[in-house]
Length: 382
Picture 1 (cartoon, rainbow, N blue to C red):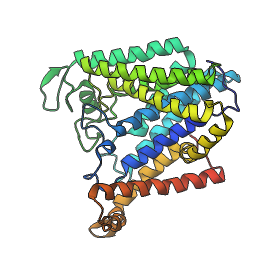
Picture 2: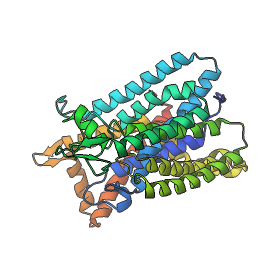
Picture 3: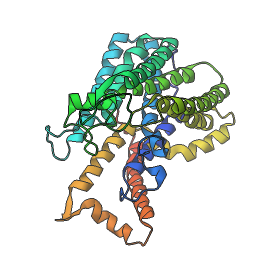
Picture 4: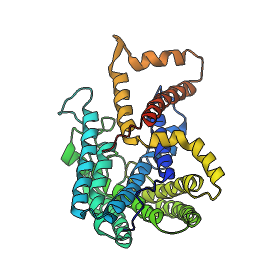
């Protein structure tokens, strides 16, 4: 693992993380879930939209951060076993926060949804930690490919019953894949309430999600290398384009691109998009040779960096606020969210525009919090 200077901070990584959390706030908090622009909703099943960028970007960024932080601390002489224990503890705390958010507002363990976004992030961190600490980049690449191949093999060749008890092999329809069967067997009654028979953050699909994290780990090695900044930028962009092509080809003849299944084609495609978006941020904020141009780009990207420096806190806060908006009532039949949304609906906008405006205002309110925390130097770390 190549050391990274303790004073070196990648502004591009903060901006990329901030872009991702801002996008998450936008797509997760519309005024009306029935009125959304197509890019602001997940693909119904196969395929992808802008919204399907967000979760794998978080996982990818987590992988980069693991390489840079663990690499720096290992270079400073920290014991690897101690680092592993700390990383596992951090992952467990993230899982705990996710479970706590799922408990709100009912606090009913009998109906608690066990899977979730933060739960997957924490689990990926725990599973990737020993691979990051004890394996070089070549072995990490082998792990990445091995996880994708193993997941494909299980999904395509293991026979399981669907929710109705009918046995089949290789079905990738909602609720019929091996992952859905495993989730029902282990967590029946504790899955995503919209589907009940499967969960988009289920256990088996965490395996390829770890591969997404390892993709970020590998990019972290590249960013920590002694290569020239322009070379790093070019090869990130080239790798991104190559991964987009591979992902599309793989999705055409193997498991399709599918976020809910976290299919290998989805992993590769989203890793390609992540390389491209990060590559642009890296060029603008860390690699551009003209310091004046770089300073200008940094000025315009500062709001994203403010978001990015407290991303986990803002993620958890937004989830809590969204739940409270739906739980608190200003009248017997009116939630606090409906009360806040009513003036926007009264503006006479098209329903999709009113819904989008609510999401933009929700995001703006959280930016004010991010800005205030940045001004005060408050950075919440787990």
